[in-house]
Length: 351
Image (cartoon, rainbow, N blue to C red; front, side, top):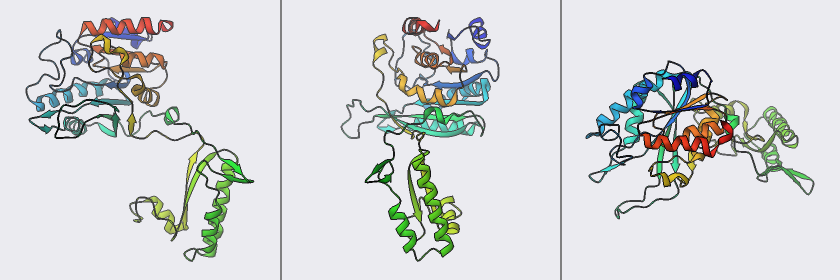
């Protein structure tokens, strides 16, 4: 397709293609897309557009057919994705005959079996929702799976770090970390320890002083020290299972530091669904905030972000705002018209 070719050559910033996702994917060259972020139609859960193909994904009579279709489609996604690329897949679950089907994990396991590597299962806490059922808990979360093709892939963790609010400060002449740790208690525990040799004590005191120096210089903002026989080992005491346990056994201590450049986000994202574009009658609009970290972390500048089920174009729109290029595939021409409107009216400076 000409519009896809123009995008791949860098002659345009985005393309919105009307058509069946699988058929359009077959026309995209191998190793040409940097990042894929998408949310396919959920199985028998929503009627997205009366103009859509009644045989399209999500309308299968049996959930196993749905899983097979998605597995086949993401086989094509894997082909067009560069080796260092990522796939972020959002899926919601469904109850059928009073039973929670586990659809997201059924799909995820099928993709793993077909060769994808699963790096994260992100829980998207939507923080609100309604429910008519009176015999179960209210469901307010969905899964976002992060898949990759290879064990080594593009991931810029510095782009998504959460910057610290609190910094080390001095109180009565004593430097304390962001959470009030000064190191005084650790020094006392080291000196009083009956579980450390004299050499281990000297090494532990030196390591603690070096850490305090880093905090004074602004390299780190906080730290925790674990000393043999004093604090509990993190995760496990088994040296074969835990590197920290091995360090504790061989050195007598270990130190965990929090860098001043912040920490990487967790795998629970508390983001409410977007309401701004609900007026366009689409029932599954990605909130822009949900797309920021996947694009920033796994798509390089000017790389191409693909959404094979692009709806009203949220993924493409956010990619453009972040100085990436965007490609959307959508079966509904009605939604594509809205997507084009979003690109040209909400961010005209990009065109």
